[in-house]
Image 1: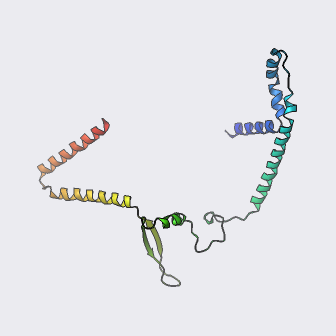
Image 2: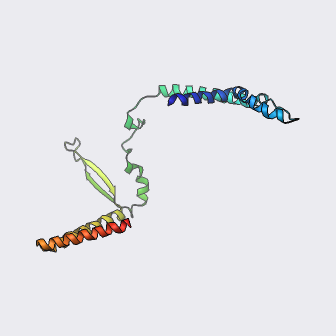
Image 3: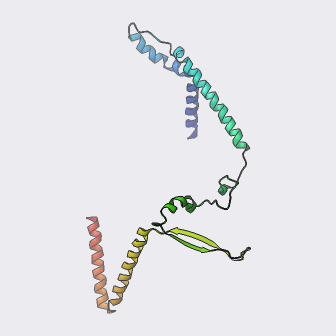
Length: 190
């Protein structure tokens, strides 16, 4: 699959740098139209396009020189660890997390966007135990949604606790629940 793309790319470069090749390929087709038109003035396209051709060649040369210089500069750069982002002069104030990325925006909305912080910070100069710090911006809509779901679950548990443990009653309640679920499913399909 790469060979056809390479062939097309080379053809595009040749036509871009030497458009005379493409003009020679279309000359027979152009001759068909110019011979049928009486009194038309045939223009030598190669002569008309000469300034553009030299500008394209100059641009191509500049691009090649720029590419070689960029390649040499890239080859001379130092390698760094992947997760260091190539920046070797980091300070203690810098971190590469989603929270640090959004810290400036979240500070603007701090009254409406409370932060839940869980931390176990080191207490001695050379800590012997692990420590951690995590922050989470509490979303009021998400929190209320889970509260409602939790209340619904609690309601179902309370209601099921009131159902007597008689086999006939439990069978009837299960059958009613099954019919309701089937009707809801059919209502969605229809």
